[in-house]
Image 1 (cartoon, rainbow, N blue to C red):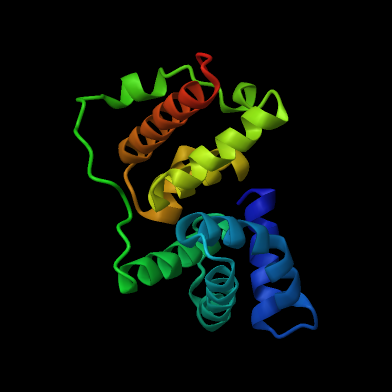
Image 2 (tube, rainbow, N blue to C red):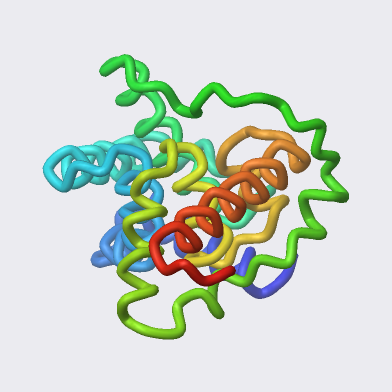
Length: 191
């Protein structure tokens, strides 16, 4: 067990033993991840706040089920993702857009050289990029956030979302492609 898993286990054990402040430390450590996942999926601040509370309530109720087989952040991310997913399903909001399959293989998807960080060179481009990200379907926004903002690996995102690695790579590719097209259309410059 590596250091992060050991510290995860210690925090979980402390929270399960009802040690003062333990669950609050767990919430503080993972509330940003929870907020990012849910906000990217539902895009409504009031719903996001409520769903984040629901997530940590569910984490509190089910913490005894955490086995330490994955990072605690991945486990909590999975809970947040599932709660947001159920919310979208209840509201009948599609998770992804229907689009033509362009036959992109995972290798081709990874080979895409679009650099999101370089696209944020100035404030205007950053504003256009933010608008373009917000226009993406919920799943693509979430995968982008987990990968670029939360810096999760493909396997971690797969654990959180339950999607196959190739599917995640495809969503990242399609998202970067849509962002590039949106930036090129807004700025007139090839991104």
